[in-house]
Length: 320
Figure 1 (spheres, rainbow, N blue to C red):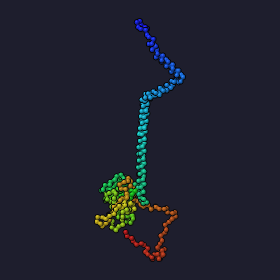
Figure 2: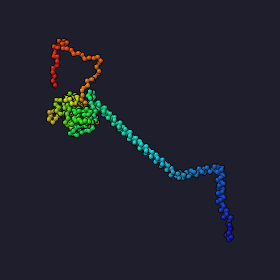
Figure 3: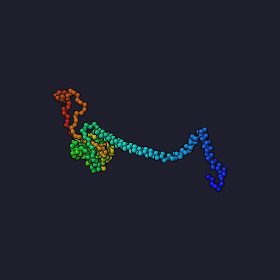
């Protein structure tokens, strides 16, 4: 609307207002023709998509980080649970393995203990050690077998290594054994190599025995094995007592004294064998053939005269 008194618009100003509109229309027409002729819009869209791809990724980064964190935490929790489960199973397997190892060691120890009597035809009874007293004044062990199980005072006690001691006190369901190393204990021994008979006494130490009053002319040396001689009837003959560690003169220089390492495991082991007293089993060896009879004794009258006259018919009396 043109007001009165205002100047009339110029032609150049009216044309300047429509030029941008015409330019946009022209550009649109050109773009439509170009798009129709040369598929320009897909290329432009692809270029624009490539250009703004980082912006899309940056916008989606928080959600991706959340999903990654959730997955990582879930996996970590699963791995932690599996670790706890596997650790418990490992502890259980370790406990079972330790138990099997303990059983194997016990089996090996019992086999060695039962084999400690070797080829001796003796009745033995197994007993467990429930208490140990190894101070210098008392070398004793407490056993879990007593008079109710047939244990008697004076019974010899052995282990897988050899002679251990003897029973000195018995209760109904327990017994006390005095070890060879007790200072008040002594045992008759014999040197295996020479047959020399001696007496070994305790020293109050669990790793040493002493053999005093050895004659200067006695054949005994380091490394000799000492076994029970059986003299006195308290200890069965032939069980290992110890090995000579050293031989030297006494203070008086009149006799020799030997230091002996005990054969028995005095400070180790959980089981021992009690040598049971009883009648000797004569039913040993190969069976007697059927129909066999002992030969009848020959009367002196049936012997040839030369045989009777050649010597006395009875052996001379022997004295110990």
